[in-house]
Image (cartoon, rainbow, N blue to C red):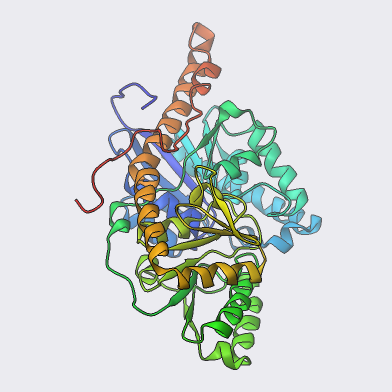
Amino acid sequence: MASPPRSAPARVVVVSHTADVGGAEIAILRLLRARDRDAFDVSAIVLEEGAFPDLLRAAGVPTEVIATAAVHRVTRREAASVGALWRNAVATLAVARTVRRKLRGLRAELVVANSLKGAVITSIARPLRTPWVWHLHDRLAPDYLPVPFVFAMRALARWSPRLVVANSWATAQTLRSTPAERIVVAYPGLPREAFADQGHPPAATVGIVGRISATKGQRVFLEAARRVLAENPAARFRIVGGALFEDAAEENELRTLVETSPDLRASVEWTGWVADTPAELRRLSLAVHASPVPEPFGQVIVEAMAAGVPVIGTDAGGVPEIIDPSSCAVELADGVRRSDLGLLVRPGDDLALARAIGWMLRHDIEAQVMASAAREAAWERYGITRTWSVVGDAWGTALDARRGERGAGSGGADPSAAVATTTVDPRPDAGEETRDLDD
């Protein structure tokens, strides 16, 4: 840990804008369950009541809710509108004043922002000289977010947080002007129970798991399923998840597509929202990630690997870091690359995805060999102990820099010296649990 021993745990406050439980919320929940409670006393501020605050409290994190319906619901479409951004900015200033009072009342020594909106509010609300760390779960790139928003967030990352903790190297690379020494990459970690082996279904069941959205690839998945069914009518397909907000129309269109297609209607199952994602993954013989837009990471891919399920992912964003960490994948077919851990497909190409799915279904033994290797790799690279080690060091370094600034006037440490030690590479050569998976 970067910080020296303290007489009392450092007071850390996590700020998040949403009560919905998505990838960013799951990542911080797992992290906080694994935290060093002797070193960090963590509480949270969330901008709406709901599932996420409840889960934080269940994890032993005292959580305060500030009702801000006018602020927290900002869609990607609205983020592209100057007018919508201006209206939201005015509301955000009002919320920030309330958050600042809360932070002062909690005597925060470090603030951790866990979302884009949380970062904006934290940058405004944090008391003077209180450092903050941004846990960045989004690629700040025009192919992922509206252009004005991208430039604003990049500027924020460069000038305001003490450190940015990115969820992949692909995410870190989109920070552009942020100095490298202020960026830490910490892959979202999995708890030990995620690696439990409960067997797999005998039938050929191919699934896609996640929020239903045009950016998540369910449409590409269905078009690929249609192609696969033409050659393998016995295959079955599952869509696990539901839509949020503006994506409800996308879900309705996809359901209509399935209902009006006899081949799909008989072979596609919808689950809607599920509480136990690992259990759903273990019902699959093949897990597919089909996002046509480069994604920051691909947490569900790691969860499938941990469950021993063969994986296919899109060849963009943070996904190749997961499926092809050694950059040694070879071309299997047009638009399809094979690594030791799974297959990578060209984004948005339903024909390439169909080729990959068909190959996996025809080569069951090779698929299981890949799945076994992927499970071992996931254990080595994505255990929550590793993730906490990286993040705990980052938090400690931010606190060290704060103490250095306070002492600078009397010959104290140079804060830049503390920050310069924080770029941590959590890839396979870093230390981590080495117990056998089945211990």
